Image (cartoon, rainbow, N blue to C red):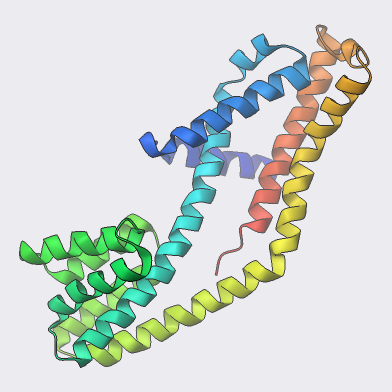
Length: 254
C-alpha cells in the first residue's frame, strides 16, 4: 500500500508544472529541508544533498493550494452564474449576461479575484466571436473543477438545442450550491482533526529540536556515523510515508 502511494505521488511530481507564483512555496520547501538536514543529520551540508526532497514537499503544498483555489473558484463561479441568470431575466442575451456578471463579480470579489480573471477571458472571447460554451468548457478543463466541467456540458447541450437557458442555469447553480454546502459542512466537521494532524506533523521536529537544545550532545551518537545515519534515515522515511497518508486522509473531496 505504501509503495502504491509513493508511486502515485511520484507520477504527480512528474506531471506538476511550476511558475513564478510558486516562489513562496519553493522558499518554504528549501527552509524545511534545511531544517531536516540539521535536525536529523546534524549538518547543514547534508541538507544540500536532500534538496531533491524539497520538490516532493513543494508539490504537496502546491496541490493543497490548488485545492483551496479550486474551491474558491467554484464558490465564485456559482455566484457568477446566479448573476448571469438575473441578467437574462432582465432581458440580456446570454453573451451580454456574462459581461454584466463580470461587473457584479468585480464589486463582490474585486477585479483581481479568480472569477473576474476568468470572466475577463470570456468577455474577450465573446468579442472575438468564440462560442461561449467553448470558453466555459476550457475553464472547466484548466481549473479542473468538476462542477464547472459538468455545468459546461449541460450549458453546451442547452445552447445547441435552444433550451430555456435561464431555467437550466438556475438548476445547475442549485446543484453546485448544494455541493458547496456539503463541502463546507465537511470542512467544519473535520477542522479540529485537520488541526490535530498539522500539529502531529510538527511534533517530531519539535521533539528533536527540544532534546538538542535542552540536552546538548545527547543526539551526537546519531550524527556522523553509519548506524546513526541509517536510524535517522529510517525515521525520516517513516515520517514521510506517515505524512503522505495523513494528507491523503484529510483531503476529502465530494
